[in-house]
Image 1 (tube, rainbow, N blue to C red):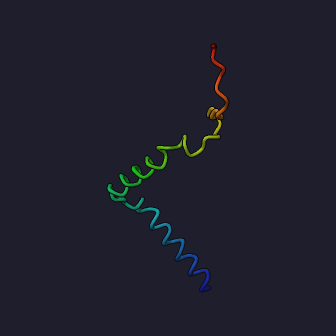
Image 2 (image 1 turned 90 degrees about the horizontal axis):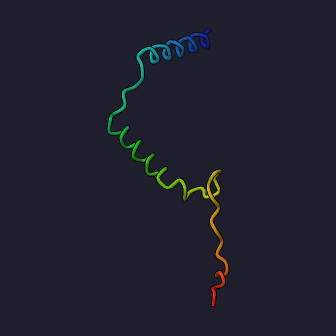
Image 3 (image 1 turned 45 degrees about the vertical axis):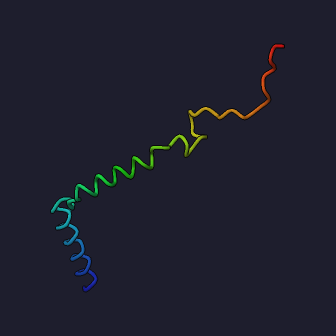
Length: 68
């Protein structure tokens, strides 16, 4: 009986919290999250040079022969 009451109480609490809507987030936190995400994704080509669609870097080789 106690377990059923505890589960019912937990479900009731979840239902009340869900009906209140989402928790307001300060605008400063949203701006900070967007700025941090931009910083992480700014150098994506450097992070994964072997990603699909990226050209392979050329290996250093001998100089091409010049006409003399």
